[in-house]
Image (cartoon, rainbow, N blue to C red; front, side):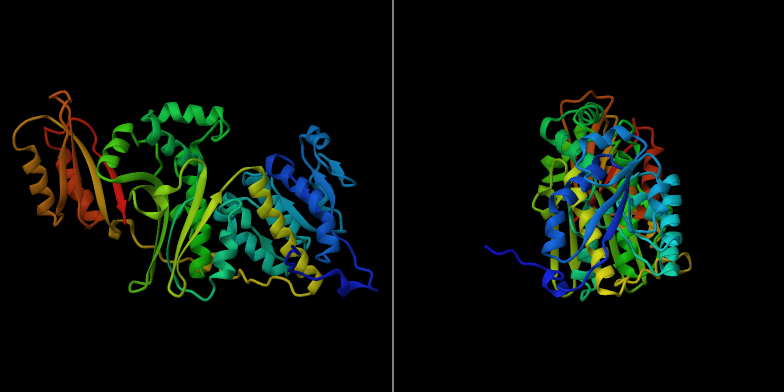
Length: 450
């Protein structure tokens, strides 16, 4: 079977001497090593079939021992990133060092030297995107970042190109493999959060310091980028309401399952056209077991996009890891190389990703949702009626109530599911209820997404 070739066939360049498209890589760790491997394996295909004379010219990493285990070929290797930046023959710089301080300086320096930049750094773009894209516009070069959101899944390309003819009303996404693995393991074995987290760290699914993942920050970075792309303005990361999964217990997962739900960490983006605001948030949510995202388990990720023309589109795959993420990085290198060969650059304008074009976000108190509550109360007459009445005073109606037997009388779990309610009204009612003497512990609250 002859593969479909999308690009510039070599025949178009017969009789012409093409200048090489030199790539400089900074960061040869897990993902960077994967990029080196793919370029070594596919280099001849890129050059001979696509007509893209891509060569890895330099690799920089402070851990120089990594080079010995990578197929770097003729690339010059060093510990100094300035060797990549100062090489005038390099036209594409790949930043894979992570973090924000050094990466920010590196990327801005590369852009100001009029080099295209490919990065997988979601924190960098979410927190410093306006500065970075402004530098790219000023210097007439591109920043490509497919790998920053969803790893190997083509999330960015789908939003910016494949679905450009749609108004995308909403995105619901499971986009952190660490959290999804932990919740999947807790669901399967009924194991406590701390135990599963330790197992995830031992298996390489969680960092030694997992705070950014389990606290929801990693998902927040990704939804900030997606929301900015979707609605043509800047969504600051620090304006997003973010909750992690550290409070989720095996009891909550078991109760959810009994009610026909599972618990996932969701990144949610919704456009309120009437109010002209965007609802962007990250939090654990209960999904009905028949929901399409309910079957996304372990380290897998998924992005569910709701378009007006195409309907629902689901992207599913590995959102992290050496080769899936490296695949997305190399795809961006190819896009940059095509621009360099064909002449025009910056096919997709990013000038709206600017501080002065900050989008209006829906105030968190105005978000409307259903809620799961697990009260821990004294087992005494009138408790359920009192809770229901106090919710009713604030216009919040109860969909169902479940009281479990077999617990100590001084601490009985009672489960409430509400109908749709405004967040601020719900929180006001809950605060009043929690001051009652029959409440034994802080109430667990999880939103329900339909």
